[in-house]
Length: 319
Image (cartoon, rainbow, N blue to C red):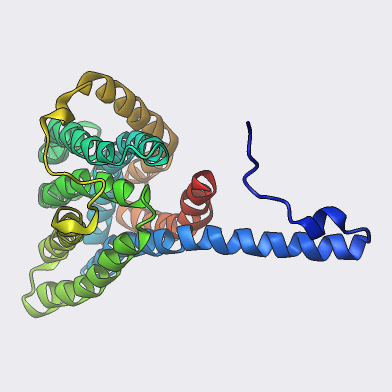
């Protein structure tokens, strides 16, 4: 028997006047909106805070020079962005599986799926690591400026710790959100953003570490978010869904790999186009200025689009 998501109120069904019906429909809309925002509000804040970590790093690097900002834009947007998109897409399979397990009250399976996702994402993260190490050679191969390629390659190597942090963090976030524990992800991300601003200032301005200091600060911040959520999960915050590490995580592992990798490829195809734009901008005259301007515009656009598209849409599907 099908049950509607919104149960009609008796007074809505019996209302006879147009004005009365409109008032009652508006009331139902308000009730549903409050339920939706309780889900997506913390998720939006968490996404903005995580996005803000790289924005803060970009802002500090922008004060170092045009070449430095252009190199960071290519390293973070093209290489790290591509890999992040692939890992994020792989974790979307966990969102589906955890949602089904939570709805069926098979709570222990959430922890199993989390561990399975960790193993899969860490394997793929390891396989993608050479793209960071060979960044300079790849940029030179496709004809990018030698100075830009050298600096972007140097910066890419320092992004590797952040790369593995993403492989750990994305499954954790999906695991917590499927249980409506969004406040945990919001708190850890918000506190880390404040710490990141201070850390970046100290490393870049006080110790004069330049672009390396900004990237290292971002690496530390991403791992702080991972540590906060990991401690919450294994420390007793999810007693029903986390029963400890289990060999069951390796069961049906190949099926999970096929499902998650297909999701990763799909998301990459969806967002790779604007990352190619950043790369192509490097061929223009005054490439540093052009890449800087485009990356700033894409940063602003990304910050704006993550609210209606990535989080409100996710919250609607959860409801």
